[in-house]
Length: 297
Image (cartoon, rainbow, N blue to C red; front, side):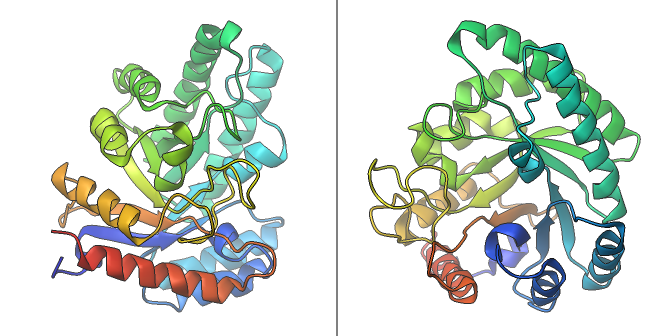
């Protein structure tokens, strides 16, 4: 592509993934000062003071703010599709509070993931997830905010109900019948571990996609970084590098996602492996993006 990626996408990164070991305000300041980024994805902050600091910094940045509730769910074993109603309500309440924090930070909405499931209770889990997502969308709508469900693996690492692209499409179709502030978040990192392809996932989910992540995964058991660990592009024995990212961009172009009038958020979800340097990994990811983008026809 001769035109800039920034014409068609609001390029962002996940703060907590890019800088897992840096103080939150220091890393947020670094990202806000980096004009490569049009967007930043944040998670919850530990104190009200940190929330206020972050909100003030973000208000100056002219960046799109996105809020990821996935770390909240994973660190607290929250399951929005739990069969046990008390457990489901616990997850729902936590996610409703996340919407409040997202609003304080100036975010357009929140993203979350479905919980674990078992084949014997798949239908019940689906219904429970609908119930939770309804509540989230209803509340978010009062604040003019979006609710986005991120697609994860279903049998490798996170074992999330959503899940295979056709099943996620079924869920999204049901949600869109009643809520226009619901969407799906597709992550290139997860496509290899859902045993699918970029073309299949994007074409299957096309009407419902509102947000993208890009990254990598190791799908060979027994190798470092196996599963949903988001190593840098080109990591040893991993699935995604420049060519796979180029293919992903090409599919997005072919399927009509290059929207200069209202660009989608497209965020880096890459994190350093032990012994790696966060700044180098982030810089290497930018290099891969530039090269892959240049090769899009």
